[in-house]
Each structure stands twice: as C-alpha cells, then as structure tokens.
Amino acid sequence: MFDPFLDDLHQGIQDRGGTLLPLDQDLAVQQSERNQSSIRSWLWDVPDFRRWRVTRLDAGDSLQVLNSVAYPEHTLDHPILGIDLLWFGARQKLVAVLDFQPLVQAPDYMDRHFSGLKALHQRFPDLSGEETMRSFDPHQYFSPWLLFCRGGADQATRSLPSAFDSFLDCFWRMHDASAAAPSLLPPEQVADLQVAYDLYSAERDPAHGLFTSHFGKTWSDRFLHEFLFPSAQR
Image (cartoon, rainbow, N blue to C red; front, side, top):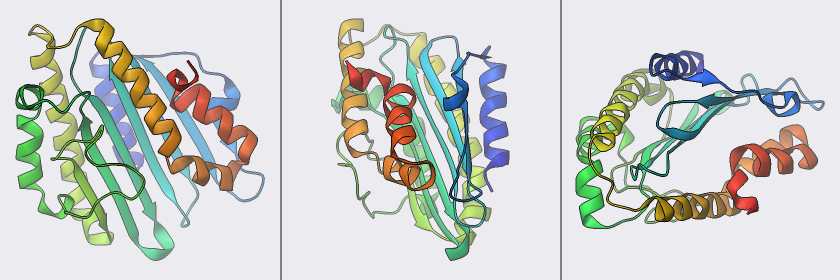
C-alpha cells in the first residue's frame, strides 16, 4: 500500500543530499515470530537536519504503516516533519496524519512557517476533517492545518497520493524559506523543545502498543527509546 510513498520520500531525501547512517541490525529489520509481519527502519543524514528517521511496517492485509519524523538542526527553528500513515486492509480503513509539527504556537511563528500547509488544508478537504486525534492534544506539537483523516479506500487511493506528494513539496519549500532567514528561536531553545517533543511523544505514541503486539514488549521498548524518541531518555 505505502511502498510508492516510501520510494518518493527516500528519493526526495537523496535528492537533497541525504545519505544512510548505520543502524543496529536488530532495529533496522525485525520479523515477527507470531505472524508474518515485518518492520524496516532507516536513519538518514540530511543537510540541515539533526535526525531523519523512516519506518515501514508490513503486516499484509492486517496492517500497513509508514512513519517518518524529521528534526531540523538546532540552528533552524522550523517545524518537525511528521508523517504517520496506517492502512487496515481487512477493514478498508485509512488513518493519515501529515503535519508540520510546530515547536511553539506563537502567532508570528505560525505566520512564518505555515502558509503553505494552510493552502494544502483547503485544497484537500478529504484530509482536513475536524475529528480530533485520540492519543494526542491537537493543540500541542500539532498545527491547526494538519492533514488528518480517518477514511477508507477512496481517500487512500484518490486523495492521499496527490496530497502526500504536495505535502512533501510544501515541506521542502518551507524548509528552504526558513533556512534562508534568521531563526526566531535561539538554538538552545530549539534543542530543549525537540527534547520536550520526544518526551511528550514517547509517553503518548500509540504505535508502541501496536509494535508490542507484533514484535513483543522487549523489542518494542528498545525501539521506542533508542530509535523513535531517543531524546526522551535524557
């Protein structure tokens, strides 16, 4: 389901000079002993980004997942890239979250970084529903213009592919504009806010329970703290 999205994401990263970083084999690839599900992860070194991770879970018709989070360098104050796509094939159910996750909610910060995402929010009404996320506070580390959907096959096959490509293009444009202008936040504050993001996300991320059900608690705990949100250990 999400392999074309994964290919587009990785190609965009490489086009921007990204190179793969070594990753412990146990974290890079894991096969479930309980069923046929498998999970693969990549860690990228990308110019202007402190950390960029990608994860792809393939559990056949039961579940497909694509997740990616990109943290800018501390000298850049722009939002964290957040991608979370889940497809439950047996139920024909899509959950999609695409957002520029703001470090702060100040109006001048929003005005500077979110004009492009605002336009996408209006362009893709299928992915701009008012339903809130269940595990997170939508007013903390999420923007008012995130692309969010609990839908079905129509959204998965028609709306999402175009929205995904447009979202990535929009993020790179926002990044370029932000990198060319002085940061609104000092590097020390950006560093603290990124750590706070990891702490907040590690406590609430529903993926931990999902990974536990497929790969066991021991591995999932390690994956959460060493790969997904390593700053949460500090």
